[in-house]
Length: 97
Image (tube, rainbow, N blue to C red):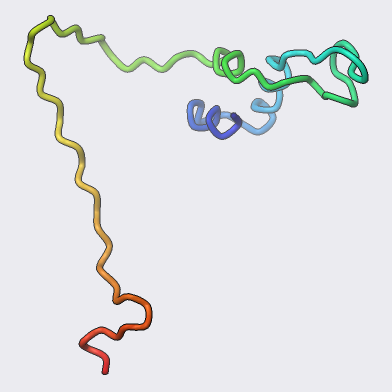
């Protein structure tokens, strides 16, 4: 959850992250836990949705609506770079006897 929050809010400091997780956690009650922050369950269970809601949503720009039956062309994916091939373990390349 912490890694996902840091990806969403890139300027999130460790102190702010800890504070958000603690303040949005769901309390765990019942023996041996007690109401509120305690030595058994700490601040409680992490509530990822509540923690995420602490940050404003990023604006992705104007929404685009497509009418039913319309043709839509999406941008082509960016090609992945490939690594140079390597000889299989135990085999030598033709350049090396």
